[in-house]
Image (tube, rainbow, N blue to C red):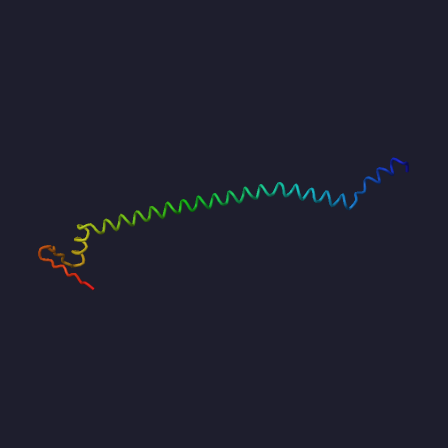
Amino acid sequence: MSENDQGIIHTASISIKEKAMAISMLVAIFLALVVPVSQSARRRELQLQQNQIASQSVLIDEERRLLQSQLTEMSLPEVTLRQSVLQGLSLEKIFFDEAKIVVVQE
């Protein structure tokens, strides 16, 4: 072999230090690419959860308003009178001049 061939053979073998450096560079590049992707995925997941919570909040508010309107409707005198007739109850009007107020003092 000539002198040039020996130089090529010598440079073809990579030392352990160079291998470790190459592997650490590959790991660093991989981490540099993975971290932003994972952050973006986590951000998207949090946005989806936030949107889901907001839609649930809207549904709960609508249900609360519906229940409140039903309670208001049930307290109307016409509905109360109709329900009393259906249940066989009789409602009588109380006149305030006949009512007596009792106050208990301690």
